[in-house]
Image (tube, rainbow, N blue to C red):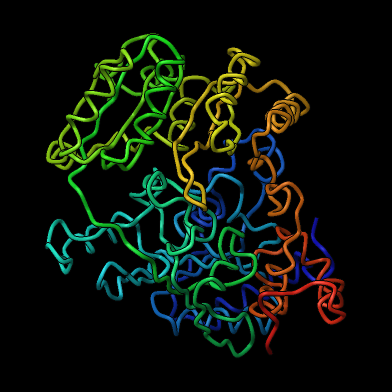
Length: 488
């Protein structure tokens, strides 16, 4: 698996020398390296077979920019691979080192730098829950209120880092209002460090900053992020039950589209997913009825009357309700049963399950969801998260549960979704472009040349890196226009 420039024995020896040469840093070289070399890749039976043996040689946990720079400089000088890690809550093997070397764990590099006027800036390792807690204390809006909160968080918000969401995530709770993280206006700027023997820092403003987004830390090391925030609300949590899939789908779509109801999340879990969740955790006992189709929602408390009106109009019922104060005092939230937490819990009840990720076409999303449910029956279980597209149209993203049989059938299932006009982001591959249907992005490759000219960041995950000479030749000949150019 290792190319000649990453001879395993040479990487191991060089990493040992780096650890010895930087004794003031926090290094992990014991059995914890195994855990810190992994993420939730095992959601995929394909990735589990391919990646479970991978390990780094050491983990560095820097606390300051100078410490980050020291590790980067030493690795660049010795040609040792670097894999950047936040909390490791991703699902694609994205922070697992294919060629050993150093894991750069940024979880201790975690300060909120400032928050003002609905914009916040923080170090990449900050946990999103901690950032929300801090920004909610800043009441500098025109009417005071409850402060500010992140526009988008994953279901793993307690442990996931801001840099991790930026580097490996897509969207999450809040995307129903603000779209995916890549939507114009969400990410305003990043500070990145070059991977060189004498590292430099560079500030990128949007839209150039998005060239480092969602590429698994393969083309740049992000130190700080500047993001737009949302006004914080007192969020009411509710689970609504429906006897038919069609009624649940129509309700979820109507709520998502309702302009007068302030909302943060609408999740449809079709039967039998609620039964799987009830079997997996006693914490949900009494919140759902066996056999029902469930819609999990977060709405502002002042929107409850409108919510109940829509529930009644669609023949649903409330099976669980908590005020914002009750959620806070219990320290439990239904958010942790949505997005890929749904997959995690369902797999506890049925270990044969895996999942796929999909994007439905706005305007056709309900028809597509109905057609696919009718086609697959109980082989593919419907889990839909309602979001806005980058352009602002309301649609849904799927995290469908699949009763896994073979790799070939898994590929067939994804292709059938494509045949219905549904986009697939394949979570059973570890190469960036394979997850995005094979498309090499020349701008991403050019950005890697600019920030990682030695090819040391998370090597082996970006197929376009092997095409860098052709891409730059095409740019020089005017056959392709690049948003960024390498600068050395």
